[in-house]
Each structure stands twice: as structure tokens, then as C-alpha cells.
Image (cartoon, rainbow, N blue to C red; front, side):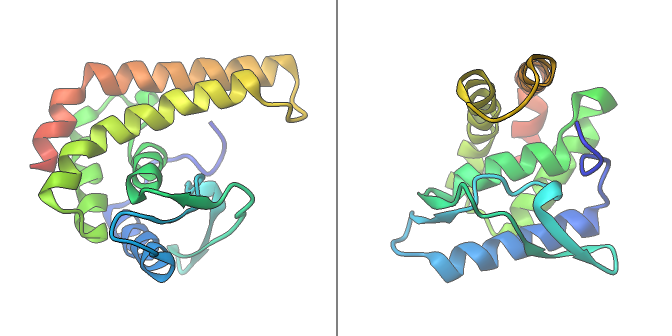
Length: 163
């Protein structure tokens, strides 16, 4: 989509997984509830020496499940249908899951969380009153649906790499 969405190296993805886990741990109020950023993509990340070191833009932050953020992060850091390399991307989703420290149970729910975040993005751009042109809105909806279709088509590959 934007310049923040590119192919990331495994060390960058791992560093982001550690960063996101630290953020969630600092905000944890119960075993399964944290403050979710809700937009933890590369475009909302500060880099130092080419590695993620901080999150910015907390305007959509609110309590939720860590899997909400992890689903979005796996999508925006690891998955891009335009590259059409699901095996490499699935391996990077595993790098993110490993760095974050996901349990086996959480790993079993991660692909569903990715798909939900892609669907939620369609709903967001369909319903938002944000100041965007009709073409920008249509492009973002189309992109989100395309990513959802790619993830669905390659679900087995993503699930297999997580276990």
C-alpha cells in the first residue's frame, strides 16, 4: 500500500515482535487483555539503525486481545499478496510469533486473527468518515479484500509454519 509496506528482513520482524510484546506486557490488565494499538504496522513504527524501536500514533488504542494486534502486525509486516511468496511470508509470520512468544494455543488462532483484521479493514474503509477521496477509499477496500483472499488461499501454508 504505502512506502511503509515492503519486504522486511527476519531480524526486523523479530525486533518488532519483541517490541509489541513489551508494549502489551506494559499494559496487561488480565491474562488475555492488553491495550491494543490497533494499527501496529510499519507505518506507525520508529526505526533506529534499521530496526523497530518504538510505536507511534495511538489514536485507535483501546483494551483488547493481543491477537488483535498480532493479526494486524502479521499482515502488515509479513504478508503481501503482490509478492506471491506464501512460503517465505509464512516463515516470517512464524518469526513474529516466536519473537512475541506466542503459545501453541495462540498460534492456532493467529491466522484467524489475520483474516479478521483484513476483514475489519474492509469494514473500516467502508464505514469511516475519514477525509479520503472516493478512489482512495475504493483502493483500500480492494487492497484489503485482495489480501484476505491471498491469506485464505494460502491458509494451510500459514498454519503449517506456525506449528
